[in-house]
Length: 317
Ligand SMILES: Cc1cc2nc3c(=O)[nH]c(=O)nc-3n(C[C@H](O)[C@H](O)[C@H](O)COP(=O)(O)OP(=O)(O)OC[C@H]3O[C@@H](n4cnc5c(N)ncnc54)[C@H](O)[C@@H]3O)c2cc1C
Image (cartoon, protein in one colour):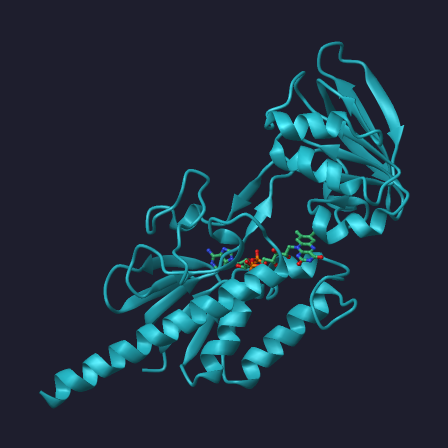
């Protein structure tokens, strides 16, 4: 039964690794399966300055610590794999990996995370984390007295633009349309803020710099005129994509593709839980992913205990 585990966790970001720590420490055999490198979005972050207990830590180091902690308790972690089939409905869940091995478990935690929607223009990949950010709470503090751009015209963009004025000396909102999609009070608040100005009907067409971001080129959508702007940072808030496309036919999702869970992180399928950035929620941080992972693991532990009791009862009868 070496391919059978009490719980399989899919995804080794902050949520999945935390679940792994709690489950293994509770003596439940646990397998974490992860596409790509262990750590998820944490490893994209050069500095995390808001994770309690660490004044400042690199995302890579925090991920390494979490991984080592989970392994210390006996959690098995397999990374750089591809899940090729997933069976969630039956009592014994099964996960096929790389079209080859099949792992089974009584319970599954989905912790597949997500990613911010990107502009997809030249230079964006190069300057991610070097001037380009998708998270004001995470990176706003690095732009004290700097001039920044916020891209987007929805609630998040307008709300975060206002919050970034706590740090930045000037915030320019660049939006592709001539009106905002945000609620009126967010728009009013931004318009009344003396540090914020607006470049409407315009799109960033590329990012340039040397080690870090220095300039953007902006194209007006009505006139096609291109202007160059010097800038210290750009925050992009044009939506969020949960990593649920591969499980969209297996589990209940909301209209945004986020996994629907209750307060115990339980999904619509018995024994299947979800945690972290892939679930329907408002705030996406390492701390919130860790909290979700904890709750999902405790719920899965309780589910396993109930299941074991039922099995013992069935055998003794
Ligand atoms: C640039 C950047 C900076 C940030 N800075 C901060 C910060 O300073 N402070 C803070 O608190 N938060 C920060 N965040 C947010 C924080 O990193 C995330 O909210 C948190 O790490 C989410 O953890 P997660 O485990 O839910 O998901 P993720 O980190 O996204 O991990 C999910 C994992 O699941 C894997 N996966 C996806 N699909 C599958 C599949 N089908 N099969 C197997 N594996 C799969 C992924 O490869 C990934 O490893 C930042 C995010 C970014 C992008």
